Image (cartoon, rainbow, N blue to C red; front, side, top):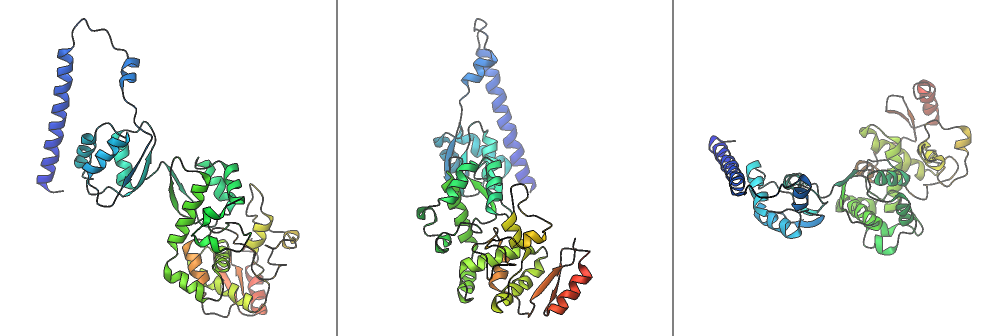
Length: 357
């Protein structure tokens, strides 16, 4: 900050403090001795309550115009105070555009800070990669974004109107929205319905897939739903980013060869229960469970994705590495040993079996 700007800010602050001090002194002098005592309850009742409110801010809007809009919406009591505070903090040109919702009882500074940081709603939730729908529901409900039961019902009976125009509208008939609720950081509106939450998450999915990526998926010979299913398996199987395209190649190669996928993550999805959605140690009984998601028994891909994959896994699913691998085995350090032949795979199993437990 330059010395001149610093002096300007200090001078402005001094003037504001002087004005407030003068106003306080004037009130103190003008009050007659005969005035009745004002209690804390009286003072509290006299204070206006601001919010809840919604305000739209466009790119390039000035602090002055935003302040007037906030005051008109009932979010703050004085647009002048908002503009002055933005100036004092040096945030006039750092106010983020968006559709903002504010709950009641916020101070002018709290509203200004939210706009400066782009927090469009107090309902902020991060949905990480690799969660299944039940876990997404749990996280949203814990953050008071949705009612868990109502959200499950909305997912189970999702209407064409909710998914209309989204990439999810092209999924197979009867398929759930598993895999389509994109993992990301969200700010949800205070007055949104469960259907609104679904729409927003589907919209984020559509926005995250570039035209180039969609074109690669279309040219792959498999549908978006199938590629998303492959991506969800990659998301659950891989920790090391550099291995995503390699695991993708194993899946594609096994599908092309007509082999069972035999992916543990799909069995975990099939046998998962509340509190243990991703069973770590699978038993022989688990591997033999009758389920279209058990790729040790069912040929081809599962009927839907098994989790919400991130963009890196979707990219890998659309662009597998050009390698002949058909097998991989966990080495116990977060990476895998890859093999082309069953004999090579068995050697890796013998070498790393103890480390992977």
